[in-house]
Image (cartoon, rainbow, N blue to C red; front, side, top):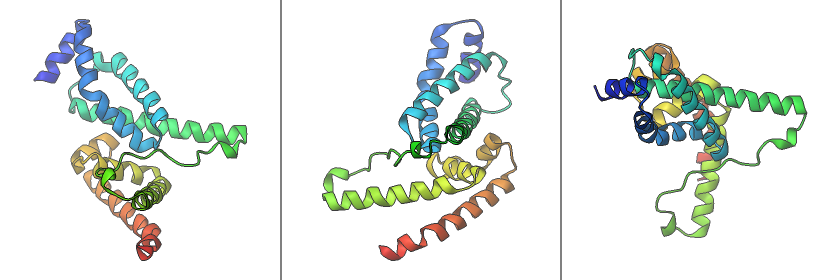
Length: 190
């Protein structure tokens, strides 16, 4: 009911209503974009694009899904489009050295309690895992990120990705199999 009231206020051109929507969803959207893109600056840019699209389209929202599901769908699609554009731009410029050396990582909880060598090892492991996730096919990566990091239920992931719940299960299963094969040598080293 609160979502409907907010949208009615937005449709009545109440600027505070959109600010409420923005404030209550910006962290969620930024986190999704960051996990999809692996780069804070790109995530910030795409987050802005998402809210511009939301602002333009919110008056047409039909309440066929939760507002957060609609936001996730826009964020995932914008992030995927951004990735495709960056790949195309790199290819067109033939600047293969422009590929980032590494991706930014999220802070590790309890990092202050660990030795520098433990921190380096954890960061290295996290980098390897993020690279392996980044190599997954687009749909598998999207399903995995939404399930594992955003902790969304299969039904909501299916709605976001516009697929069936069975497809989500299959995508997650294949993603986990691929990651297990990719990361098996890492497990032996630990």
